[in-house]
Structures are given as C-alpha cells and as structure tokens.
Amino acid sequence: MSNNSLDNKQKSWSGRFSEPVAELVKKYTASVNFDKRLAEFDIQGSLAHAHMLGQQDIISKNDVAAIEKGLAEILAEIQAGTFEWLLDLEDVHLNIEKRLTDKIGDAGKRLHTGRSRNDQVATDVRLWLRATTDDILVGIKNLQLSILDLAEQHADTIMPGFTHLQVAQPVTFGHHLMAYFEMLKRDAARFADCRKRINHLPLGAAALAGTSYPIDRDMVAKTLGFDGVCENSLDAVSDKDFAIEFSAASAILMTHLSRFSEELILWSSPRFAFIDIADRFCTGSSIMPQKKNPDVPELVRGKTGRVNGHLVALLTLMKGQPLAYNKDNQEDKEPLFDTADTVLVTLAIYADMLRGIAVNKTNMRQAALEGFATATDLADYLVKKGMAFRDAHEVVALAVKHGVQQGCDLADLPLSELQKFSAMINEDVYQVLTLEGSVASRNHIGGTAPTQVKLAIARARKLLS
Ligand code: ARG
Image (cartoon, rainbow, N blue to C red):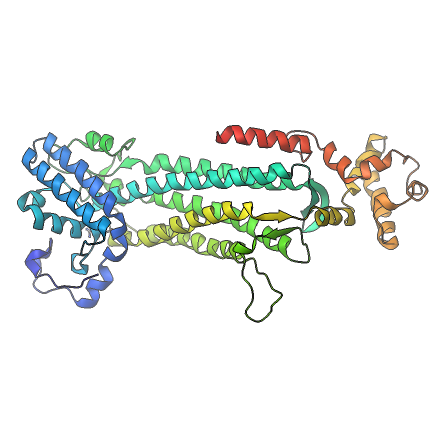
C-alpha cells in the first residue's frame, strides 16, 4: 500500500476543500485496505454501466471502447499484483477510476456519468456476495455428502441417544449424523433464499435520488445477471437487509457446526471414547505428552462466536441510520468478508475432518448397554400388554432402581426378578430389552430404525443429485 500524497486537484471531490484532509483522518476514513477485494466486481459493474451509457448515447462508442480496454488492463494489473493501491484515493472505486483516467484520459472521467459511489459500492457488494453465496452452497453440499457417507457406514451402529446429556434411549449413529444433514438442508435453503434478495441491482439510484440521464437500468441488471432492479433509489443505496440475512444464515450454520463440534469433542475424549479424530486435525500439548487435542472442532466452536458477533455488528450498524447513504455503511465490509471467509474454510475443513473419523462401535454399544437405555421399551412393552402408560412408567422406574442397586442393566435381570415388578412380564421381554430390538422398533419416517436411516440417506442423496 502506497501512501503517496496526491495534490488536491487529483482527488475526485477536493475542489471545494481549502485544506487537505488530516493524515489520521485519511487513514481513518479510507477503506481501500479491505475493499480492494471487491476490485473484480467493481470492474464488472463499471463495464456494464459503460455499455449502457454507450447504448443510450450518453457517452460515445469510442469512449466505451476505451473504457473497456483500460479496465481490462487494470484487471490484469490487479490480478498480477502490480496495481498500486493508494490510500489517498480512499477506496477501491476511486483507485480504479483514477488509474483508468491516467490510462485513457477523458473517456475515463466520463465513466462516472449517472452513477455515484453509493450505488456503485452497493452493486459491488451484491455481486461479490452472490458469488460467495454460491461458493457456500457448494461447500454445504460437500459437507452434506461427507455426512451421508459416514451415516451410511453407520446406519445400524448403536449408540446411546442423550437428553440432558444423560443416556436416554438407544439410537443409531447414522440417525444421529442425519440430524446434522437436516440442519444443513435448512441452512442451504436459507442461503438460497437470501440469494434472491441479494440479486437485485442498486445501480441507477446514483447518490440517492436517481439520475437525470436517460439510463436503462434493466439493461445493466440483465448484463450483470441480476433478477431485477432495486425499486426505490433511497432504499437501493442504504439497504443492508441482504447482508444481514447472509450473516444470520451464516450464524445459524456456524451454530449448527458448533453443536456438532461440541459432540465431536465429547465423543473423542477418553471419557466417552466413541470416536477418534484423525491426527491431521489434532495437535499435541507442549507439556503433556499423552494429549491429543481436538483443535479443529474447538476452533469451529470458537469461530462461531465471531460470526455471531458480526451479525450483531451489522444489525447495530443499521439501527440508527437515517435514509439514505451514510459513511457508516463502509463498516459492513469487514464483518461480511470475515463471515464469508470463516464459513467457507470451516465447511471445507469439516467435510474433510468427517472423512477422517474412526468410530469405536464397541464403546458406543457398551455405553448404550450401561445406561438403562431400553427402560422406555420395557414401559411400552407393558402398555402393549394392557397396562396404562403412567403405571408402566412407575413399574419400570422401580425395576431400574433395583438394577442400579444390583449394579446391572434391565436385560441382565433374570425373568423371575423382573416378574416381581409385574406379572405381565414374560420371556418375550428380552426381545424389547435388546438394543437392536429397541432401535428396530422405531420404524416410521423420522425414527431411528436402521431401515429408516437407510431410507433417509437415499432421500438425501436424491435431493443432492
Ligand atoms: N467506501 C465507501 C463505502 O464503502 C464507498 C461509498 C462512498 N460514498 C460516499 N459518498 N462517501 O461505503
């Protein structure tokens, strides 16, 4: 970043000023350090605008050709890393415009006809966010495929299902994983829906009120692939709903991955020992040689905090702003960029990490056996024999208490012992007290039976194909 001072005449708004901007103010107000990231989209928007100006005879065809050539060269310079960004030129828009004018002279100065940086930046951000949203949708799909592969391998692997983090009822690991597939399905739908509102064109709103030139906004919208134009100029230059929605969708997605991470952390701890996360996703301790820390899931959980924070930052940014554009709006970019970067890298690393998970079926099964996980099944068994559910609940509670005292599970109690709690209990009770019998009996859409898990996976694969 160069800090060369331009004289006042070279700056696009300095004619009315009698003294240069203070150094610190220049640094405080410039956005080029971060918004240069929008360069490619700024050029796309400028090209579409220039073509429209030419088409409408607002500027000459020669000017359009010169602008096109100049912007192509500038794009190449930016991509090659040779473009010199000047802090004095404030932002990405003025940097590119100044370079264009240096290259092609007056034609460059005509590019800004009928346009303001206010509708220009709003357009750039939408173009960038649309592309980013598409990348995120691909990232979500890859993660979903990764979940499906793991769930398929474990459609009938039994583990304890938890409520209150206490063993509740047996479930299959595949079923548990498919819960996250559902969350991601909703996340994808949220991003796709948000994309519809991103995809409208602000250009033409100019500073705030529209422009007196005979512009063709529909033409620009079509060139840039927008579904339509923003229909009120004041709203067009000040609307951040689409960015807030994007951040909200990101925060919800990260919150899902944070919950998943919390489970991976618990399951990989030696206390649970349900899974092993591949070494390439873990680190050791510099002092305790025995440690293998689940850094990746811990960081996902941690980074959820910053993404959630960015959502609050954007909401707070907007809450006090009168119409239309205010400089406050410049503050939307860093939270948005960081949100997108965090979400994209998290999705990629997560899909990879799930492929490196080894499952300890024996430990999962053992944990399900130890927690009276089939107590509900015994109650349901008694209900099916004619007992009222509340009575059955009490009978089983007493049987569990007895089991706890004896230090054994319900399935380990001999029939004669079980019959002390209810004469309705017969030899066939052991079928419902097994883990396999328990999960297999929950055989309806949404249930944990292996058959249902396989059907859910098949539906999911069809959805993604
Ligand atoms: N850098 C500014 C932003 O991101 C561009 C728009 C500036 N417009 C203005 N009138 N100062 O919002």
